[in-house]
Length: 177
Image 1 (cartoon, rainbow, N blue to C red):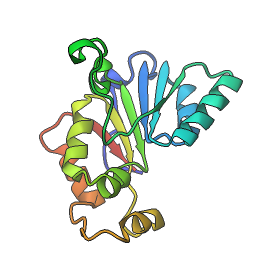
Image 2: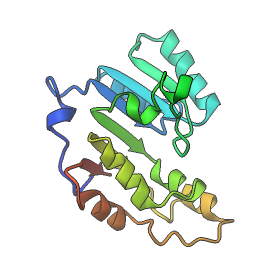
Image 3: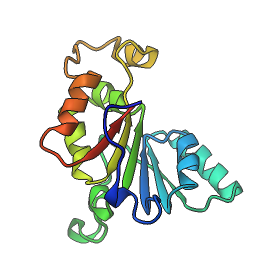
Image 4: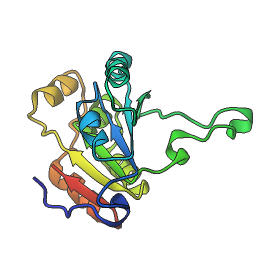
């Protein structure tokens, strides 16, 4: 599944259970619900209101009360708000997760939002958390669909380049799938 090492230390505070797990690009929360059985709290983030609403409805109907569904564009996360932008901290500064899931997310940030892979990797490293990344290959039908009308060649988008960037200059614990 990966060439990286399995996350440890901060990601497993008690008996291997992360206290706070972020599912970034959660969609309807299939993996959020699985993660919620193994984490204290799961913050499930996606920019698709309908998908997050479906997750919210399922979470309310079920018994998993430790999932917090959140509609947010990860390419433009919630800033500090309130008086002088200090009453409510920006999303990135509220509380760092012990673990983050990024399943089929990186290609959306790179192709749809034009965020260079190096910036995405640097942001993930800044979380100081265990990170699990599912990397979608360039020949995947969704990648092809997202990139079909774009002029850029996305030369920085490859699993090998992303893995190298995540390992360099970092003590980050990133697992690539």
